[in-house]
Amino acid sequence: MILDVNGMTKVFPGPDKTKIKANDRLTFHIKEGEIFGLLGHNGAGKTTIVNQIIGLLTPDEGEVTLLGKSVQESPTRARSLCSVQPQSQVPLGFLTPAQAVTLMGKMRAGKRFDPKRMEMLFESLDMGEWINKEGQKLSGGVRRLTAFCMGVISPGKLVILDEPTNDVDPVRRRYLWQVIRELTNDGTSVILVTHNVVEAEKAVDRIAILDKGKFLVQGTPSEIKSSISNLMRMEITLNREFTDSELPNWVHLSHRKGSQLLFSIHPNSAPLAINWAGEQVDKGLVADYSLSPTTIEDVYIELTSRKGQVQ
Ligand SMILES: Nc1ncnc2c1ncn2[C@@H]1O[C@H](COP(=O)(O)OP(=O)(O)OP(=O)(O)O)[C@@H](O)[C@H]1O
Image (cartoon, rainbow, N blue to C red; front, side):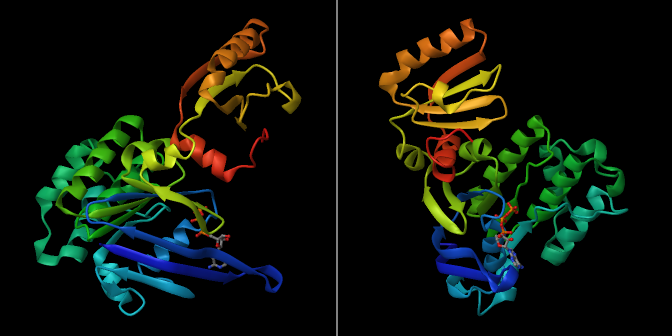
């Protein structure tokens, strides 16, 4: 096991002498070569977890163990075993991507820094045209890719990536996922912190969904989906607002995302649902609709939203 977290709890002082339980008795384990996705809303407690794994914060209760040794007892060792790509943009200033990645490579690997690995990373991410441009003249996506390369130029046993694909174009996102998967071939483990449930579902081996400091569920994507796997997902694009009373009674859960409405429905209701959606299209109330198997996004919405209500 690379990482063992047992009963980790972190409490911050809130306003007016209240307390914020940012992490509440969290237990999870990460194996060698595993990609572990940490999903949760803003403020769910993800960064607080990361900061305790790398020894920047000390848990109020519980224990974090990296490769068999307590992080609380050896925080410096923890930081050398972990590589982190932070959520915030790295301020590159006048440094070019090539200079920034070389600097980080030399800081982490010293004489073992391998410029060929840097070239391989830039090539894999198709960054050639930008590697010698000043950081302050680069787009947000290229700076994000540069920060990723800095994080993985000399990876530790555990690589922690906080929203690595933010601002990155769809083609390079794919390249990035390939590089992440290749990282795990030699036993490096990855924690992927993200809000992007759809992307995480494709990329990770196991997922934990965090809400208000507590894990709601953890397991492989298929284990997690099996919690509501007998349901299907219907997505419709509305032409106008719907009230709750206009929704048919076979709707198990509904969630609104702008003009998109998501339902979970029982497979037995599929013919009814298709009929109903078709009628709404004929009346001009719905622009289009689709019916598909359950995704992790559905589980996430079901677990983190108020059930059965349009939000
Ligand atoms: N140093 C701190 N002092 C007080 N409260 C804090 C501190 N750090 C975090 N919190 C609170 O703890 C909770 C969890 O914060 P955290 O940053 O871990 O969430 P997050 O899931 O990483 O959020 P985001 O996705 O927005 O980055 C939030 O309510 C936050 O306001």
